[in-house]
Image (cartoon, rainbow, N blue to C red; front, side, top):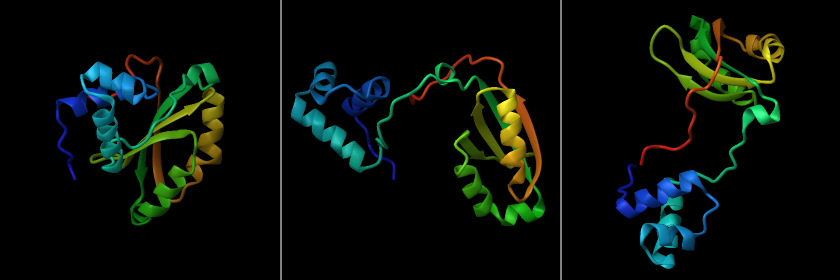
Length: 154
């Protein structure tokens, strides 16, 4: 279900994406509402699932996760029939931050973070390559990050 968002909702969402620790009073002041209606709007958007949660974003390099790899996964014909088994295995790997089902030459794209290339090699041989149904993995190492954001264009 697509929620209808007005200009106030969009302003509230933009502010929360930048700083989820803002109080409803601080948000209300910045968007031009009083505190109670602003709070009700935030609660409604939480109930509707527009706001899925609030998290703390970490700098991966400052906690020692210096390597980012994108892995293209191709499943064999038998692997495609075990889609659920594959996705559950991937969800169980904390190194995998994102997993997308693709159309085209490959079946999945994974974003993986590890401390270094050696740690990725261990992850690859001890975990990823052990998942049943994988025919091929093409690993692409990201050299640098040009843009990374969690903010959606509201």
